[in-house]
Image 1 (cartoon, rainbow, N blue to C red):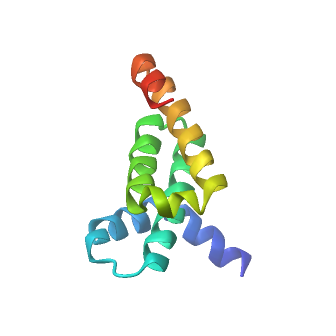
Image 2: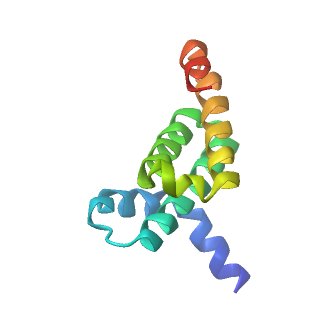
Length: 102
């Protein structure tokens, strides 16, 4: 089981990029939640590899998958996505943009 997870985790970007291409076809809230979570995981991994621009892209996608009302029901994850988004934008050298996100 652990080996299977490691193989999947190593290919997270490939999986998430592929799923993001079809994100407009998602029909249920559960599907959008799952994809938002996968984008968050990909962003965390990208940020850990100092790929800040990629992390911003994954976070933008994650944040765009749910409405403000839907994120209101998931405050902790929304906060974490926004925090990481601001940090990643800042680390990309876009200080003014990071300040505007706050």
